Length: 186
Image (cartoon, rainbow, N blue to C red; front, side):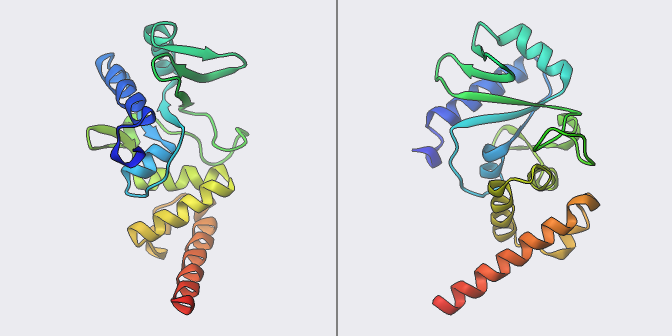
């Protein structure tokens, strides 16, 4: 059901996108839903969206209480009332992963988004950079999968921020090790 795009997470994303577009709030879908838009199939139970600080303020003003409940103790986490699916807001200027200042921050969604299947998502370079900057096991696995799906190589690394190039090359090496293993076992 998830990959047919009829599940509660997809429906929540589509309603969120429709609301943001109607309110003219710039956004870009990130996280696992962006992975799916970029042809890497992975399930998830939430929707991650990139907004500016002003966009988050507008989101709260227009939609919180009416369509979303704020999650206590989590300033940028909401639950859609209709589906009970979690929506996490990532804010321009803040930092992925630990949240501690680093060389990569969340960009303005208007400058890094493209439309895929009527939904604004972060472009592939931004998605890979944010995943690598977050420095979580799952995110590195996602990058390995994106390398495989898009047949990325060392040339792609030149498009990335220098601070994440080494991690990208390690993910590329891991993808190649997996291919060698599959060839031996095949």
